[in-house]
Every structure is written in structure tokens, then in C-alpha cells.
Image 1 (cartoon, rainbow, N blue to C red):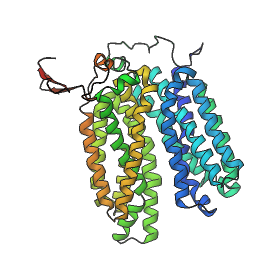
Image 2 (cartoon, one colour):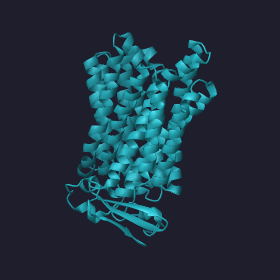
Image 3 (cartoon, helix red, strand yellow):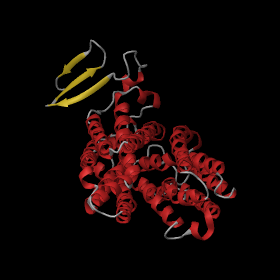
Image 4 (tube, rainbow, N blue to C red):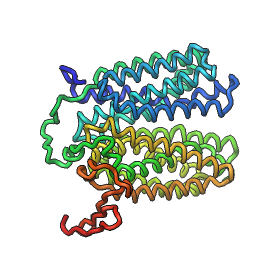
Length: 453
């Protein structure tokens, strides 16, 4: 869908940030859990709702890619906003503490709303800013990161909505506010006119050339690049999500072993997570996105995952010292946030700017894979009393991700058009080496060196 009078492109950024600030409420769930447990919920009950919202978010996002084409960005994001708001209102109307109502409202309906809306600001922003994809995507998804903190503070320390009005009314207030903000942001969610490009941007420039060749979902799934990107995002996101789950438990244990009291350890670990990790998570999205416009997406992802690997492997020696813990939490959060700016833009560069809305949801499924594997690994090894091993495994996994992303080259569109062969999906890969390109046609008898390719 295109508007008769397209907005100035920086208004698209404003709308994107309003939408993503609202969608970030998914990560504010922890602010409700104390009141829910006081109402008789178990810890497992609270985590079931959170898990339902995350899984629904990721799965619905796949279908949102099709909806983007059929409905257009404005209608799709508006539908997501209405669903998210309705989910919270539904939970509030049933008292705010009925498990089935909260799970259905916040978890299923609310998660679906986030899934419908999430990809729209990214897809629209990249189309309006082919010259600044990293910066714009970083600004948009930074709203998602900072939004979590804002919704937590509104219900807790700043607004004390739960203390003053209770869960039911808080859910109702959140539902109305979330829907209103997203509907306002949707006003500017329109694609640029056909053939539009920024003034002074030639298609021959590197910034414009990347993302001009568009792959359908089926074509993308036939390339090795998809699986390499998927793997890297899975291990990088999984490492960050495992760290989130253990950022308080493990440092408390390490700090007490270093001589801090239980109260001191709890306060320090809480500050590391609530302040240093959270703020860096939002800032990292903007910084990594901006940096990637300058040094390239692939190099940025490789740098991020390498730094993350070093920090995770070193975290054992950092967790027991207050200031090293703050530094480590900041770096982990900074790099974790960067994933959400880099992988959408990398997807656009490799598989096409115009198809980002359809293709990125399939890449984003790797976040769900990492979200299961990372926390599960941390929980199992934590129960065995071996938190350091969990961080080390995730660190080495990030190194593997860094190596994987360096194998990504521009995919062969003609090759992707062919049906997948019985020999597997890895049909072609290019490696640069001393001015030569070694081409691996991934079939038994096809290996050749191409000079000066």
C-alpha cells in the first residue's frame, strides 16, 4: 500500500520508534511477576506466559511477512497494535490474576500482536533509507530495548501503577496506551513510491548496490548463506538470552564466594542487570547499526560475535568483582542488542531490500532456537553447579558463529532459482584468498579453482 502523499522519511523513523517502544513491553513481563506470585501463581506459571508470548511472537512474524504484501504496512501494524492492546485489556477485565486469561490475553493475543507489527518498521525504514540501513534499523529496534525499561519503571518505581491500582487496572492502562502509541506510529508506515531513492544516491554506490537483488523465501532457503546467517544469529542470541537468565543468579553466587554478603551480592547483581545490561542493550542497537554502515554488515557481525565470545569466556573471572561485573554485563548487553540491528540489515543486503519483510521472519526464527537452547543449557549446568561451563560453551559457540558469518558471500540468484538437489542445500560457496576465489560447488565431483573470478 502506498500513500498519495508519502511522509518525509524522518517521520518514518519517529513512527518506527513509537511502535517499537510499545512492542518492547514483552520484555517488561518481569515487573508483573511478584504481584502474580503473591496472588498464588508459581514461578512456572509466570514463565509459561512469557514463553507463550515469545513463541507466538516468532511464529506469527512469519505470517506477517505475507500480510505485509496483502494488507500493506499501515494496516498490518495497526492490526498488531490493536491485538497487543486488546490482549492486555482482556487480561485486565478478568481481574489480572486469572492464569488462563493472562496467558490467553498477554501471552497468545499480545504475542501475536507483537509478531504482526515487529517487522513493519524495519521493512519500511530500510526501503526509505537504503543508504543508512544500519542506523535506521538500529534506531527503530533501540525503541524495543529502551521500551522494556520504560514499561517496567512505569508499573514500578516511576509510576507505581501496580502498587496504586493493582494488576487489573495496570493491564487495562497498558492495553490502551500500547494500542494508542502503535496506532499513532502507524500513520507514517507507508512504503516509498515505486522507483524512489534518496537524492544523490546512485545505484552504483556500495550502499545502494547491496540489497538490489531480491530473493523470494523459497530462493533464499536454497542458499547456504541463509543457513550460515541463521546459525550465527542462533548462537549469538542464545548466548545473550542465557546470560539474561543467569545474570543475577551466577554473579550472586560468585560475589558471595568473594566475600560479599547475600544482601550486597543481590543489590550488585540487580544493578548489573537492570542498569548496565539494559542500558547497553538499547545503546548497542544504535551503535552497531551505525558502525555497520561504515565497515560493512558481515565484518560487524564477526566483530560483535568475537567480542561476545571473549567476554563470555572471561566472565568467570569477572562475576565476583563488582566493577568487572558491571563492565562484563554492559558488554554482553551491548553486543546482545547489536544483533537486532545487524541481522535485519544483513538479511536485506544479502537477500534484497524489497523482500526484507518476507525474508527476515525466517531468519528471526533462529532467535527462537537460541531462546530455547541458551537458557536450557544455562539452567541444566547451573543445577549441576557449573555456571562457568555454560558461559564458556556459549563463548566458543559465538566463535563458531564468527567463523560462519565470514563464509557468507553474495549468493548466486540463478542457482537459487533451481530446485534444491538431493545432495543438500549447500550448492555453492565462495572464499576470497590472495586475490583468487575458490568456488565450491557442493556436489561430489565439482571442485574447481577459478583464477581472477
